[in-house]
Length: 381
Image (cartoon, rainbow, N blue to C red; front, side, top):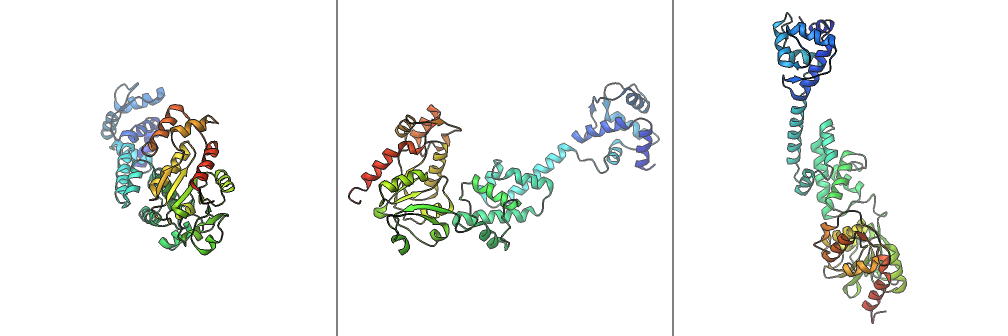
């Protein structure tokens, strides 16, 4: 008798609820074990008639399988459950094992080891990639190659997303937001602390004053400028006397420039833009950079990233326990998060933050910052 006809006959005999319960159990484990499904009295009675024994609370799949094979239907339970399922039953446990094996194989194929490590740690777009693998979304190997190549390029130079995508794939939209490759790249850049490409060469800017470089920049001495990434990438820069003051917030930059219009200044405007990162990478390595950021997790994150990314003579500026105490005495805000990852670069500040549980903005130290720049410029202004 064909399996479909057998299924119809068993359904007519009142056994469909029993078979549905057996299918749920078999999907979970793939084993002919026991379960305690909630069945009606009629269903238990139908099962008892088939097995020839009183069945009340426990559904024994092995007994059901034996009864089916010994019956006039001569069919095994797994065969019947495949028919009921409409296709071979995929056992969840085995499916999970198969998926994890595929995931491990996919990760092993990634040649960019930092990215591979981040994915293994369940960051850098791991959830996106796992979902794509589970859903069978397109050619994942091609996507991985594109993202790996993009990560390699962005570590070495700063290109806009369209230029980077066109350079690597011939399609300027291959790394657009919303595409799998584009979303993976953005998540990976963030996890690996690599500056993110910009949409174009002019949207990303960096605030500077009194840096030396091209003739047009030298002619603007005494003025503050917002330099676009396009101009920064085509130039090299120097700071007068090899000394530069860098701050996180535009309000502090503005106050410093107003008080000291000839001071060499740079503002990251929060997390450094592509333009800011490009400019810092084009300064001589012996440039002494006095760096002031907010005395909170955001400021620590920015400062730590700059120190690691750019080989300059960094001098943290009012970023210690004493500065924290002074700034918080003028206004503090609750600290959200753990500062300990930045202990190596800023041990005193991290300890103060951890003990106090509060942080402060660099504007609270504006008087001290202004005085320091004045002393540093002594004999120049």
